[in-house]
Length: 426
Ligand SMILES: Cc1cc2nc3c(=O)[nH]c(=O)nc-3n(C[C@H](O)[C@H](O)[C@H](O)COP(=O)(O)OP(=O)(O)OC[C@H]3O[C@@H](n4cnc5c(N)ncnc54)[C@H](O)[C@@H]3O)c2cc1C
Image 1 (cartoon, helix red, strand yellow):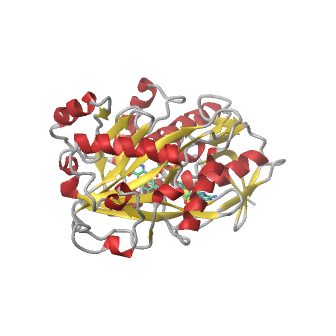
Image 2 (cartoon, rainbow, N blue to C red):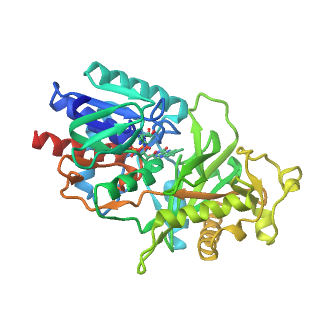
Image 3 (tube, protein in one colour):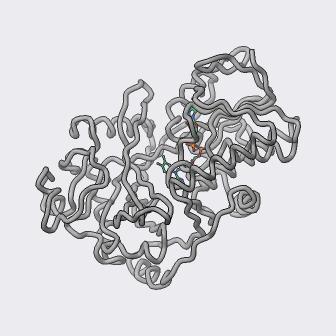
């Protein structure tokens, strides 16, 4: 059986942030990082834009401004972000405020999907030079509850400390592990919504501000805006009962790549359940599967022009005249989103879209495409024993999967916090 001082599951920003902090402060430590993919598969790998303004990416129940911001210098040291400048912010902000909408001013850096891969390579190389062992394409499948060793698809590994940081896609996996270890948790909140895609000239704010974050009444917000070399993608998720569904998402390559002329971003509505307490995960799975049913195993897409008239999109909605650009995600079914998405969620989102069209006129061009569903799962709320995200002696759960972050910088920061807890107890 293999042994290490610290076993880290997941090579996303949460896992990497922990590994850098540990090796910097305890150079002799033996760390193994496992990842089931060939390369870290979350936001570092996809689009890789980083936000360095609290509270973007930092859930308020675990972070305060001082606690988050004091960690930014350590991130700058390893990530070397180039902060982008924004223009005409106050013009958009005034228009937003008149409607009761908030526009957040955020320090951002954008590496792009290609730049993200180069960054990951550099980070991995640096950690290897500090003695960290990476085992890629190795998956943690289980944990032995009594003697506490991790079971992977290749071997068994014992540890002094275990950090599990499996990201959003590891949401269901983490719930299985928490059930096994009898860790209490709730997951009563979920973000559901659409991905919007349109021509850059219909949403020209992106020329001034790369990822404008608007917060609308009713807990609706824009999220993860991509432009220049931007594309919509779909991601497969496995549910708690191994049922599969798709969520759409977006990304962009760096400035060096050919421009697509398109912009995409998410419009998300946060849904929180109270008694009788429902699981956000199961609610999202149900909606994901409903969309799969209606889309013949694919996500749905609809032109705004059709949606406004209350009719479904079909093949013809994606050819010619006013409908003047092709969807960047081809493997999607033209249809009627309002049949698949809950009415209350759609009402809030449509109202927010109308407000956004008043702030940035053009968005509701008939050609604009709405893709459904976009689902964000980061609301696992384990019962933590301490401020270092320890859930049981020597076991730490961090990152988006454990609900301690909602983005790259928050995830990296959670890694530093878990590492601090580990260093204190060694
Ligand atoms: C397509 C996409 C684009 C995104 N773009 C951005 C962005 O531009 N900016 C931003 O701030 N955030 C973005 N995000 C969100 C971002 O990914 C997360 O906030 C952040 O990466 C969370 O870090 P993490 O370390 O918790 O998880 P992740 O980065 O998701 O890393 C988790 C890792 O764990 C591995 N893993 C999971 N389960 C297992 C297992 N059982 N065994 C072994 N390995 C496992 C996964 O393969 C993965 O590499 C994006 C997410 C996606 C999916």
